[in-house]
Image (cartoon, rainbow, N blue to C red):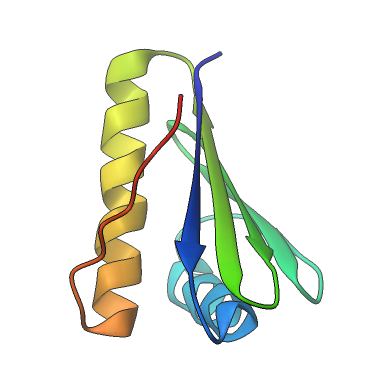
Length: 92
């Protein structure tokens, strides 16, 4: 299974995890703890981990094409929440 990971500088990473979970909760299953969450999409899953100075995101899917799409969904959601264009570098 292809996996991508990104580290995104964030002053309030825990708040981003909370807001993402709220936004996605109506449409998909989420397992959430205080500083982390696992979001299940139809095409794969996304793990969010809040650190003091960054948000660590990992996405996992069945194939590379789907991995690119899920990375795009996560990018769009984060940019929508922050209101800025983020230079997210995904590592495969």
